[in-house]
Length: 114
Image (cartoon, rainbow, N blue to C red; front, side):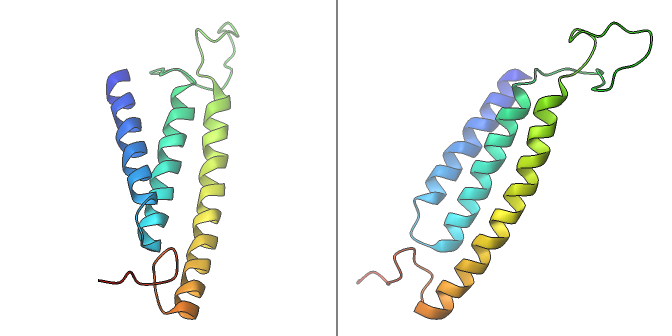
């Protein structure tokens, strides 16, 4: 399971970096989204992969990390998802405004000469 997660993080990061380096603004936006997904998976995996372990303390069970999942990475990822959604909405508004002003969707604002 750890190898699958590591490969998923690597593929998302590689694809995100490749798309961020593209000349079109929509590709940059998708690349930023993929990078944020990779970071969210990485943060989530730092809390150890635990199966059938609740993040909530139950009566009668010792209060140590052997019996519970770490809730901090889950809270960080949830916060990052909300911030990432707001960032993407703002980025798309700026992207549309830039396209309307320059009549081009290139990152530098100009079409390359053939």
